[in-house]
Length: 186
Image (cartoon, rainbow, N blue to C red; front, side, top):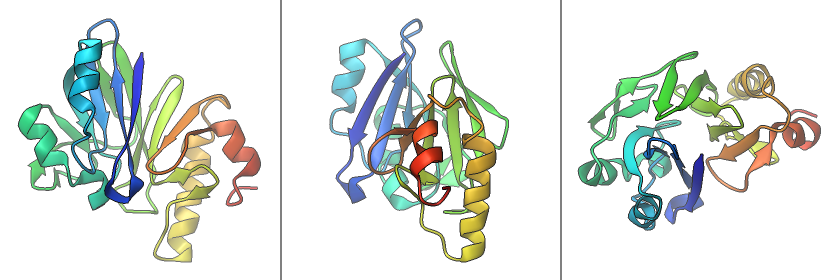
């Protein structure tokens, strides 16, 4: 498995490239802008962008989508049927997204936004803005915060403790660290 992190200028959002070493297919997670190093990383590893996954429809995770698709036409997977004017393949809880021999499980994690989805692979999960290192995504009401916390507990914290959490902003973490130290769950 190839994993590359891009720190974007737009709101210091994170984007990620996940590649299958066997088939050389790659998945881009979120596209707040066209990552400056994207083509370099694809070329370095001999990868072809074969899919894009959007964790939620906020501009700092989607504004670069049209630019990415213009250069690398690939199916877009998202909870919503359209993102930034681009048609998507809609996903919901329990669906899978394949990248070569790698298979990710879609986990619905609403609360920060109604369309929040995370994508879990055997050793890592892309959480978007549902869960950060030491925090959760902002919500519009206490009820939505409770909804988000409940979804994180039931969907992400049931993953193995060593599972890496790759978040929409900030540093990576693990399930074990967030269960033990994140003030929203302690």
